[in-house]
Length: 217
Image: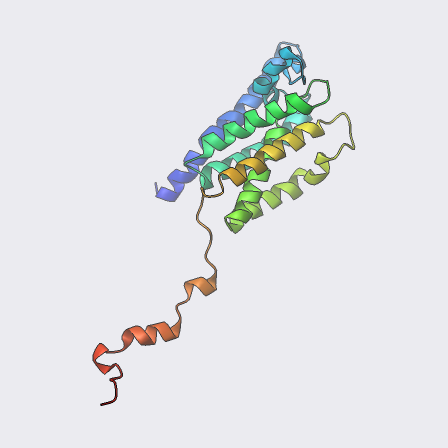
């Protein structure tokens, strides 16, 4: 297996496990005929702190889970592929910082779902890609924005049955981390102009040192 393939397989392991866990939780909830909604974040209530850990694992229905699964997988794989050395740190910080911010500022209701994590990952990859001038990261995030369905509008309070606060706090955590870790990640992509050698420099290097102009006698 080539080094590139090994890197891709490595990038799939944790994200794949996380998405499988989301589905396992939903199957458990359905099979046991129970509701896990009360495991979500309930802002400014001490018992609601448990939701910081459990909220992203819980989804209201199968449609909610399906809509979140592919973006969570795609963005997590991108993070682990391009930011291998700090991927776990960034992923976990987005997970918990987003949850803490949501608990601090959200409406007093149960907030569930992985969409806050998704917004955080998208914001981190998008902004970090711009800062570090990595076009592939920016392209991936833009793809998710369009594919996920009017992602930017999810930051606005149009539908009060949707936790727009989770979207906002997730995105804020991603932006903060992109700035903090702006010096880490994939190297900036060189433009073709940077890669081309200046012909005049080649001519100078090819000159025989003995042929340098001598001062007038």
